[in-house]
Image (tube, rainbow, N blue to C red; front, side):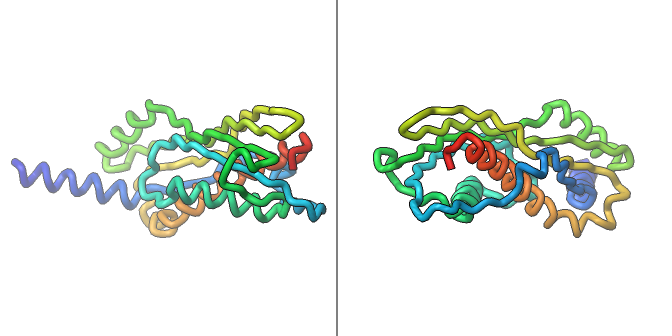
Amino acid sequence: MNRILSLFSALLILSFLSSCIVFQKNNIDKKDLVNFTASSNNKIKAYVHWRFDFEPVQYSNFTYEGRKEMFRQILEETNCCVLVKKKKDADLVIEGNAYNKRNPARLIGWFVSAISLYVIPSWHEGQIFMDVKVKNSKEIKSYNIAGDSVMTALWLPFFPASALFIDNLNKTEKQTMKNTYKALFSQMKQDGFL
């Protein structure tokens, strides 16, 4: 009996590993994703603090430190700011909380798909959200960004393409985070912070 349960568990795990693909939904307006570079040589001293509350994504290797590093890189690409380690030394303070929302009911779909060995498909969407407070010497502004999202689909016919999509999960997750950061920068630029 234990051998049958072990075999069944192994089949479920293998079927899940090989039947998952990921799509980026691209629900951020493209005009908000335009790269910009500051024209001034006077760089703003920026202090940045992020808190991340992300539900772990299976197979993802995109860490919290990776998310912080991506923000730093995108900020440096704008050529507008230099990061400082202490809040008191900063002209611009950016404090944010980034998180994802996923429907808990998706587990029912996953369970039904797994029991049917993925003959019955299931899918769910995860979206990135940011609550950010930006402050300079003149004003304080709060941003609530509903960012980009990812659609994950599980179905047995995806088996042939799954090897291509496992790597795509990491790329897609990073791209959705990057798009959400760029949407934040676009709004900050419109409001005169950058």
